[in-house]
Image 1 (tube, helix red, strand yellow):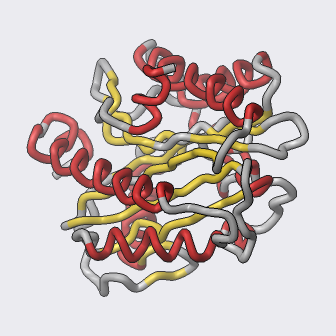
Image 2: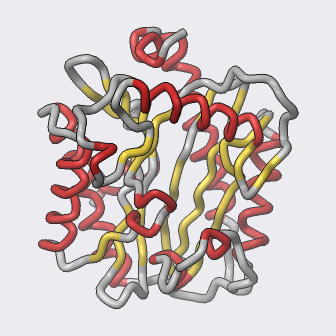
Length: 277
């Protein structure tokens, strides 16, 4: 089955949607139990346990948790700094929970942002973040190149008085392509936070997309200077405040067709929060 087949197959889309909802339920469960003194490692481990108890049978990448200024990747220079640490949550601190589970080869990649107690700075940043969901979708529907969209998001972030923190991710990506993992190999075997089957799949997709003059990684460089590729894309705009003391993101799946695009699901925590606001 090709990537385009996924976006025209309702059964497959339903399965991807189910996994995404499962991932968000797990993140909300863990978030509801966060309290002062909990460490990033404890939160990430709790999310991993919950998801594996509820049917996850492999990992695109294992759960991450970031607290405080680490939600904005402040002073991150090396990939190992993304790993959960013993940083402890305190009242008023922002947090981000990020997980990418696999169920029967179907993948989700989600990011849940919040704060423990009151944090007006985070509230303002979250309001700014809400604009990006519709803005990115509109630009994809206009068939702007991925690199153009990346720069347009940069411009919007700057106008809001914020900083681009997804540029700190490996590859400086704002998104990446998802496909069903069909390659064999051991499950629950993780190398540098990524499942072994995932790494094999990513390698195959990189090779295939390069042959077509495209990239499965959505960034701002020449490799992304092409119209949106039909398929499933995990999109993760990540904003920081000036000085990068607070960060907020969302991550969810966008479906791109040959002539349109839509979010895989609107029944998500951040969507409901923004509608209430």
